[in-house]
Structures are given as C-alpha cells and as structure tokens.
Image (cartoon, one colour):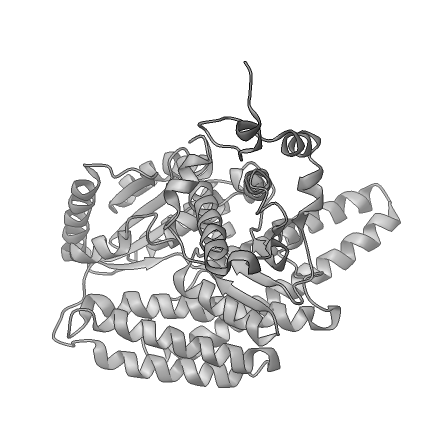
Length: 473
C-alpha cells in the first residue's frame, strides 16, 4: 500500500497505525528506553508528578520545591480520551489514565507557551516495580508513545524503582539525597493523615461540604509549610502545623451524629487512591451511611523497604552457605541500608500518628512485619510471592479482626494480584461473617455498581447493629 509523505510524518495513532521511519527505528532498537528513561538530575528542570493521591502529590511537589526543584503535580483525568486512544485496552487502567495525563499536560503546555515550549525542560516522573505487575512497564510504554510525537520525544521520563526501595540517588546533589528522602517520606505520612482526617470528619460534619473545604484549605497550608520548612528538616514545626489543623477539624464534627459502620478499603494502590478512577468510591460509601478508611501510601513504601530487607537476608544466608565472602559483604551493606530505611520510616510514622491520635481518633496504620505474621499464622499467602496481594490479604483479615463492619477490594479490571486476593479472602470473610465486596474498575461505568455498593452497605449496617465495632477473634 502506498503511503504519502504527510501520512508517514504523522505521529502514531490507532487510526494510522504508523510511526515515522526515524521513530520506528528508535522504537525497534529500544535505544530510547535506555536513553530517555532512568534517573536524571532535576536541577533546572520542571519535574512533572502524576496525580495519584490528590493530597500526597501536592505535598510531595512542595517538598521538591523546597529543595530548589521546579516540581508540580499535573492535572489528572482530563486526558482520559487521549490515554484510551494511545493504548490498546489490554494495559492496566492506571496506564491509560497516566498516559492521558502526560499527553494532555504536554499538549496544553505547548499551546500555552507556543514557540517558547522546550520539551527538554521537562522530566516526567513515572516509577516502576519489578515482578509480574504491568506497572513495571508503564514508563517503557509511555516512552514509546511520547516518541511518536516529534515535539514530545525529548521529554525524559524519570524513574525510581522498588528494586532499591525507591532510592533518590542521582536526582539531586549527593549531599542532599538523604534529606530529600526523609522529608519526602514525612510528607507521605502527613498526606495519609490529612486523608484519614477527611474520612473521619466528613461523615459527621455539621454543614455539608465543610470537611472538604477545610481539608482543601489545610492542604494548601501544609504545602506552604513543607516548602518553607522541609528542606531544613524542621519536622517539629511541620507537626505543630498539622496538630493545629487537626484541632480545628474537631469543630467540624457534629457530636449529635452517632458513629457509623466502619468500612476498610484495600487493593491496587493507584485505583484505591485515585478518586476519579474509582468513581469516588469513598463518597459513595459515605452516601449510604458508612465511614471509610483506605490503606495508606506509607504502607506501600514501608513494604518496599521491608521486602528488599527480606530479600537481602535470604541472599546473605545463601552466600554464607556457599562461603562467598565478597557477596556476604555486599549483602550485609545492603541489608544495613534497607534496615535503616525501614527503621526510620516506621519511627517517623509512629511519631506522627502518636501526636495526632492524641487529638482525634484517626485510624492507625498497619506495620508490615505484623501483616506478614498474619499471613504466616494461618498460612494464607507468602511474602515470597510478592505483589500488593501480601498487603491486601493480610489487611483484609486485620480489618475484620479489628472490628470493621465491611471491607472493599478496589482494583483495575484483570489485575492479577487483586483477583488472587479476592480468591483467597472470600471464604475467610464468609467464615468471619464480615461483608466483603470486590470493585474492579476500568473506564466504563457499570450500571449495577451502585446497587452492589448499596447492598454491601446494608449488610455492613446489619453487622454494625449486631456487633458494633468489636474485634473478631
């Protein structure tokens, strides 16, 4: 079939199915994936952070700005049609959303700046993980998509990986890496607290909309605090500001409103966290009479450090058996690093939760080591298999035993770890007599979804009336 020059120069799309010759050569050689996906120093660049957690992304961007990096959290869900156009539908739903987000942002930015638009000024942040999850390939696929647009091909993709516990080496001057890592994690825990604060007060607010407006204003306040104090590691000042937010939030609660059924949420980290993609599940649960608590972002970061620590311990034992002293020294060094990371993260998390829970009973978080013990005790699953199923299965069991009145598993349609989770926990939840609901999502709106949630909440209400919030077993 003959192809004219205009067609050949078009970027790839499902309609044309073509890349230009130069782009095709780049894609086939895979040079672009090794050259334009990785760790880059962010000095004098604009760092684009995709929005997964609405509060967490903004606080993280504020932390980076405090360290002198031009960082911003990009708009989300406005480019979903673009995301669907440049994916086949076989990818994970978050891949469609984030692909659309970056394309929408770059197209909008190019229109705004005109000739002043310089794609080399941007670094788009898309981390990865190893293992079977498709998340490990998002940034590679998105690299190919960006390369199909000549004007966006120079945009680099900055990637951190679970293989080293999301180390920040290489993105900032070496003497500032540790400070940036500590402050970034601190912002993650504070964002978790602000989320849990919202979920704690919104079902009991005196005036409709008061909780949302308050937490939005508090998020802006905490952004300013992190940008001002974060790089100096003035964590006490940040905590003082957070305590002030929580004290004010208590006035929003109407004490005349009785406590409601407590619903735990687990699942794939992006879908359970990204409000638009899960069709505002927490608000729907609240509309039908629930109080919800979502699994935290800090839990996942702790898990990556914990899992790397487990792996180095296993490798160390093997090296000792084989008497390979060079590998023994290397594994001891890595083990000390991951153990230090995990100790610091859990210390900071305990510190923040202790101070905040003294003011208001926001939900506490799970320790990853405890979650592994839960799995081992009943031989439910193994951390050796990895994936978020480790956290979800144990988290569901813990929610049930802690007196939650129902649990929802949120995940992308066809997600392997979450369907594994569902298969394992359904009979367990039946035995415990605790309502359980799977909510797989894609870009469609399922007509029976709200009816299923309404039925689930009826069951949770009945459980609440019989048991209250009492621990099971």
